[in-house]
Length: 290
Ligand SMILES: Nc1ncnc2c1ncn2[C@@H]1O[C@H](COP(=O)(O)OP(=O)(O)O)[C@@H](O)[C@H]1O
Ligand SMILES: [Mg+2]
Image 1 (cartoon, helix red, strand yellow):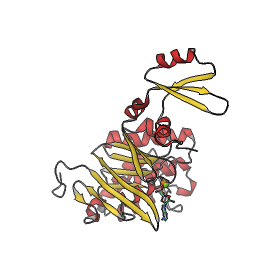
Image 2: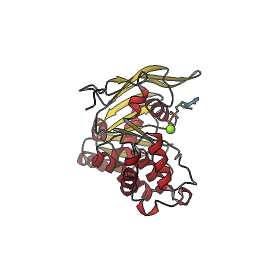
Image 3: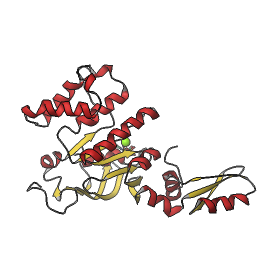
Image 4: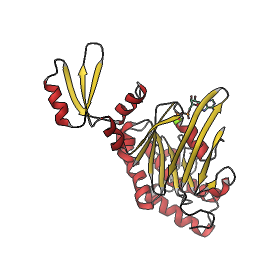
């Protein structure tokens, strides 16, 4: 442990973040903690405040109120020190299209002050980790969307951060490519032990990847916990009853109980497992993805 990090403090603690853009309140008091090695998802609909939160946590914008601490040290007072601990994968891949994969990574090692003798090895390891070694000398403009995302992820790891932020890392990708990115992000967490905080509006992404989910809506965290616990709170199975003008839902702790009820149902009915979408709908009265 470095002397600058206080023992026992959370890797990241966020306390009462408020962000106003003029009259609009994008964040209305966001608080949570990230411990070393966590995998956390910030799940919510468009406009909920996910990108604003990530931008504050990575120092791109300042909060109107509230505080952020990395390993117990105030981020606003010690931004440079904290930035060594954090890596950022923005929503838009900001690669230089005319440079090769290797050159893009090399630029990052310069910007992050990685000593010259260490650069080559770090870059080669990063290319290997992303499965891009054979494409190292190709210009990024020849890369597919999935390859670019993989490159941006390993670029954010070159300075060996302890927390990696990813803002909607798989948005707009087709399902198969999305899965290869999930594998890579899981590998970062499990093999390197890097804590992950990703934002998403994809239910499946949050359920499959995250150990803990923070559900965000209109600038507030409205529920928090492991996906299974959040689902269990409303029931594991749902009976959907297709009425003429709407779908009614009834929740049950087990499939058997849901099926019992199905037998006595006069309408067209279906039993399925509860998802985080149901949790969100219960809490807000609307869907995450409309
Ligand atoms: N620079 C800005 N100026 C004004 N309003 C903004 C700005 N950035 C974000 N907002 C508003 O703040 C809210 C949260 O936005 P954002 O954090 O981007 O949501 P998300 O990433 O969850 O889709 C939205 O209502 C958005 O329109
Ligand atoms: Mg966003």
